[in-house]
Length: 204
Image 1 (tube, rainbow, N blue to C red):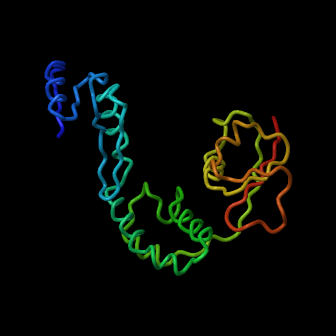
Image 2: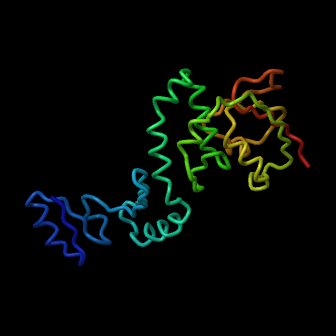
Image 3: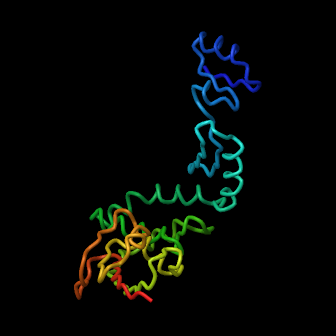
């Protein structure tokens, strides 16, 4: 059902297509019915890198750069999360609480950071707790997002809500999670569950 033509033979591609096959013509995206991504396989985790046929070499180069970042045990982590699905649902029946607990486990630097190796992820999942209420005050002194400290950038990527005090530049707010709440003003004394950031604009 599939054919790959390596020599760019357009006539051969048309003959095969007329027989009902889907055709890939190497380095000729205009003649392709499908393209082949570069694959990083951490079964059951699969990462596919495609360029729409623009450059197989670029896809391969990206795969070579990204593959060392994904631990060999990433599939084992995925399987442990699948096996724990029912127990996590029973322990955290509220969907938002469950989502925060799992997000905390998988956060950068967290107990089950996906980019780190873990000897026994099932044991860590079994000990998971609901995410506590936490608030952090962050002072922003530059409109350049590249000037953010690593800690601030990490907190922005994890926070579930932002209280914005002053005129914090949009470029800074864009570094936060897309689904994070953005609220003008001061945070309450008792924040909602999860991570809340109080962003204060203090320009240099």
